[in-house]
Image (tube, rainbow, N blue to C red):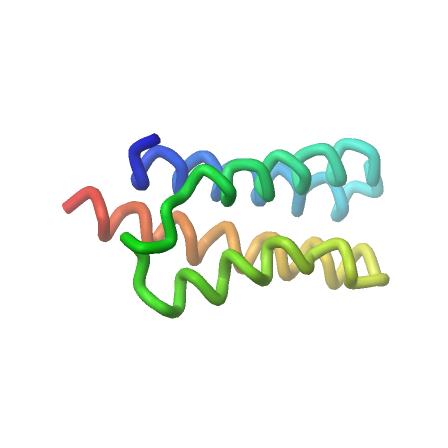
Length: 91
């Protein structure tokens, strides 16, 4: 899969995850969190910068955060960072 598409898709999944946790819809948020982890597995880490590899690991550990608002904030932050990375790759 193209790295740009995978990063963009993961960014969108994380944004939807953040919105779900913020609205209190944990079932929806967990589903999109799982989708983001699946998309992360599609990305070949050999083509990524080291900071993106660390961020991919943070996506996998998102479910360890207990507070849903903290999860929402972390998911939104990761979403923005992956979106920016995808835009830089596409140039």
